[in-house]
Length: 82
Length: 210
Image (cartoon, rainbow over all chains, first blue to last red; front, side, top):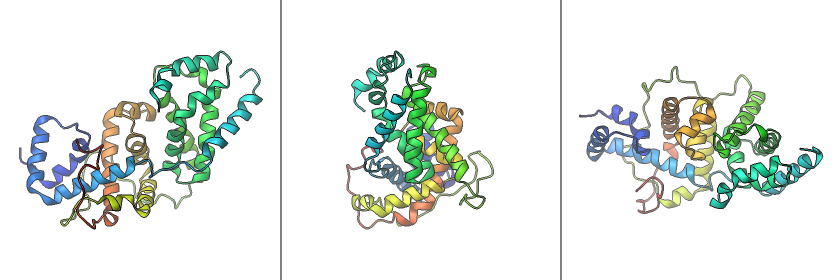
């Protein structure tokens, strides 16, 4: 199976999630070996996901937990039998 | 999350339902971040996200007896959080707000990622840059809502496909299609900020490299 670039782009998510079947995986990898453009698309997408999963990209505000539990205490306490 | 917390979850829920109301604090502690970040990533407003996270937990407390234990507790909670985020988004939305045109269909049709021929991986230093994180948060908030929801649950919260499908009330195929679209849109939006300054170091990408 020989893939064009645009067909490889359609497989990038499946590739990153390791969901391609063996035949497609082999075809994508063969294409990536010789195509800098698609390798770049893959790397940039992967890097975005690395950044996304980084706990420091989304952070809790200072005092969040304390305020949450204070409010819960007020609600739970105020609702008698629960 | 501590494994012990997950293991004891069913027991904690049972105790809350039997009237040990204070135990609810312990039950939700592992999920505070998940609930807040889910809502924040959808709304990109700290105040709204904090209030929404509190409302989510209160709602979970009040509806705990309707939790059946068929879904994971975390999935149940994130579903409530997502609904809270949607509600607030509706409220905040003005006609001019959606900054990207919605693609015409959900098929895996034509789209092109941003292409860079001189691409090299981002160096660790670039990933550490605060501006890049801000750009990413901006870009996520600019995704059309249906793509944003899937991206938030799959790639920010790292729920699996089945959990994401359950939380959003859709099938796994649609989750895959929308996730792919979302990722490609983000790639396109973020490539200008991802240009490398130096060759990458190996061994950093714990999740995406074997």
